[in-house]
Image 1 (spheres, rainbow, N blue to C red):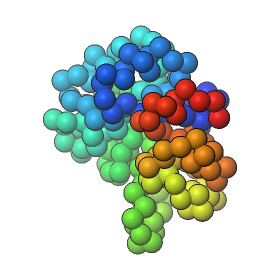
Image 2 (cartoon, rainbow, N blue to C red; image 1 turned 180 degrees about the vertical axis):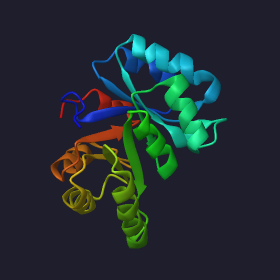
Image 3 (cartoon, helix red, strand yellow; image 1 turned 135 degrees about the vertical axis):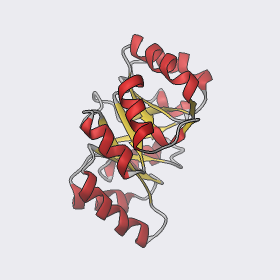
Length: 184
């Protein structure tokens, strides 16, 4: 999975940033905190600007992050892909032939081991590793799974972006607008 030669995936946390990102050359956009009532129009607007939306299913306000919520997103909203920590959401997206991104929160070694078990079951298209500032863990996960890695969370500088890429991340998702305008 490659993101059109871009190593940055702009992550929209604030809807005020939609117009800015719609005017960029980025093909893939990560959509974070949204409200269920706004989803259809946001995804349509981004699609009208030739953007592919990776929607964080767990962060849609007013929608339960379960299999039924995932079915609604796949059928009615139709983003390019779903990001989730939940197995049933990702398996539903996989059945609908959407891009699947399993989000991993690396809290400790127990969380990492249970994530490996879930990865075997889901076999997502990509893995988003949070926080994305732990290069040796990014490298370990990539080597163990051979699945493209998106580094996200707590990445604040160009150097941290480059470190994540050098460690094996395919891309970095960030809501820091100052990092969107850079070429990596």
